[in-house]
Length: 87
Image 1 (cartoon, one colour):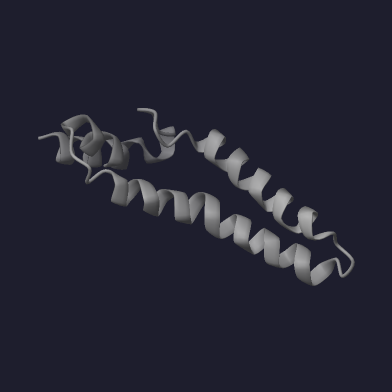
Image 2 (cartoon, helix red, strand yellow):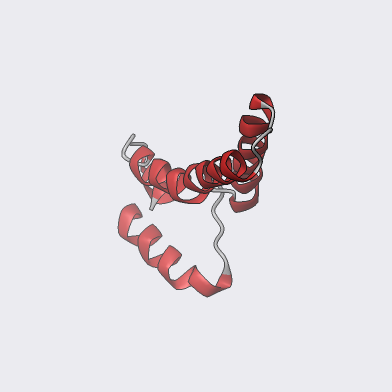
């Protein structure tokens, strides 16, 4: 939906894009941060934030949210949302 809304030229695409970023990048990196804090008692403060930050950047680059692609397993849902927003 975010790709279709972005192609329409409105700013409404930012809401689904932000939701995707939260679910796929920020929440897992926050959980990784909490895991590091609670398991490694003597972890350096920079390490506690750098590792989750790099993990968030890796997941963002892996999922490629701004490109017009989808995995085969969910391609039907991607196409339905895309056609619904482009019409």
